[in-house]
Image (cartoon, rainbow, N blue to C red; front, side):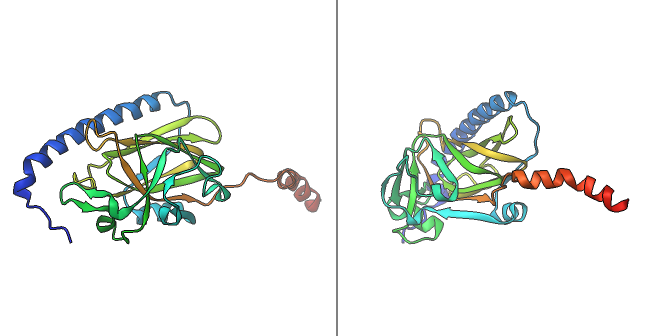
Length: 242
């Protein structure tokens, strides 16, 4: 077990990292703001820092974790979750073991200690910062468990056109940058999301580690026959009244 360092011995280093993380978060916020200015659709995006509130808003969801992945670089095609209608873009991810990666820079604890998983658990290591998420069918909710980040931005593209961006800084959690849950829900149907990963501190190149992805039950498009029946329903009702 790795001993926890005292606050007094690490205070200058932690303070510097906190200040740098704040600058990094402000930089990512500017990126998100620029994306938001380019939006031409209005929707309600809600950010979630805890799984309970996200699940309550999302309803039925599909969750995939990285523990079932082989080590090595994630293939572009076929992807391991393509059969579920979920794909990652810009897939420069490598599968690494949780026991081999630092998860807490204050205590020097590894990811398996921070997340409470077996050291052999596979996580996705991503360098550098941004990647895309694609859904074969629209959804209204998405989340991930990710570590070593200064904040997350979700640049959401809607099925009916338009996009909006929401930024979730790490501020409400802590400055240690432990693995954190980030989620987003929407009142409009989502077809893809750009995930913007904020640097832990400037120049860190954002080596982030993802343990799971989850998304709401897909919203299938109505079948042509169903639409025809809906169109005929008022006529049928009128005939019954006669």
